[in-house]
Length: 540
Image 1 (cartoon, rainbow, N blue to C red):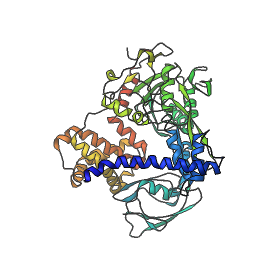
Image 2 (image 1 turned 45 degrees about the vertical axis):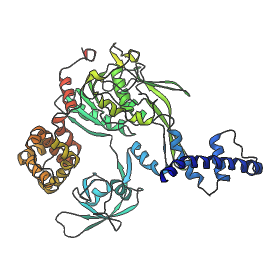
Image 3 (image 1 turned 30 degrees about the vertical axis):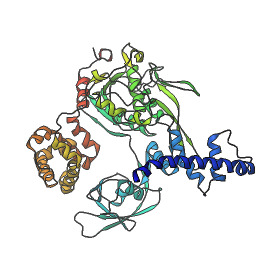
Image 4 (image 1 turned 180 degrees about the vertical axis):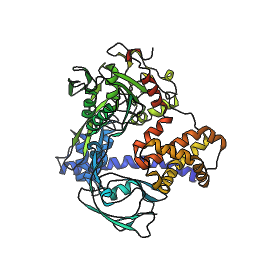
């Protein structure tokens, strides 16, 4: 009986739906439209539906809220990068692009349900008051935050705010019995685009650029000048993991590497006539050899930079195929503080190639493309990457490059899977390496504070046997020592430990020179740079 009844449910619901529509039509013809001739099911359907809901829906509803929820659904029918930014999110978005925000000036991690201050930004509000790396935040504005399961986003909401506003922070500090209270006046805190710049050897400089914001060009120029003074004739510019950002920032950067009149890129759209961006006469770094690192997470402005350098035969691109975002968005603000980022054009590299990958099969498959590339072996072998002849283009000197889905590097470097083991995967899943690095830093801060370079810290940690002490720590956290795993992954673990501890003490100036030892793409770039390889001979 129950089984028979269940078979009738879909039929019953269908009949009810049809009947409901029929009744509605009947009543509507006699009442709604006859009494409200201004409501007509013709013209713009979206406006008509909203008007009908507002005037005739059975319950009272918030039309503004319905529109707010509906906008993302409408935009999903366009390309994957057209998006809606609600007013509540605009501040964070603008801060990222402008290169600053208002807050207390600390970097933190949440470990063992406690907010640990990892670094204090020099010159910021917290540094001025004497807050130190290693301090624990236990209360904010008299509310307990330790041991409450607080998340990163919650901490940001508590600590960030308008410039000039106050926030009370209670600190637990090692060696002090009582809680320390600080009344902090929030100030402007910079968000840096250039993570680090340093000399790899006497002739080779390294610059890591993590985003393109309003301040990026100035930061990058300062880094170039610093390395130039230190004697760098070769520059390795790392754009791996850089998602892009301001078009103006990347145009200004590329401009300083090209001759007057060289094309940087051009844009074109249905309502946007072709616009060519060309270099002026600056060419500030004409004498520098350029090597650009990219990977599958390099997108948008990063691809503009790499494409312009490649198409003009100005430098060598090293790494793996980039993401493939060749669309230009324009941000249109609304009166309530929200905005829509609408794709208005495509950009093309100097050779005429569009590097935008296809989004014809929908957003879900578009963003799953990286997984598909990994599954098909593209991260391991250049031979697994196939381009149609129709996507071939020529650089200024006649080298073949490809469009249709990212920038293909001149020299391919596969993803590094060496040194991996089940032991390492267990450590990684539990984030034990970074946790121990902070704990070790916390316990040895006085000794480490006497060291000012990555090399000094690395040598100290090697002599101290940090790897062996970590293995014991990991065992106490549920990952017992594994001789085979340690043999396979020991070098990676040891290097990461030293790099994270160095970062905790002196920032990225400590991290990158150490992690360089296991960075296969950077090591390949260093090797290539020392061969004085001419661009036109790449791949031959």
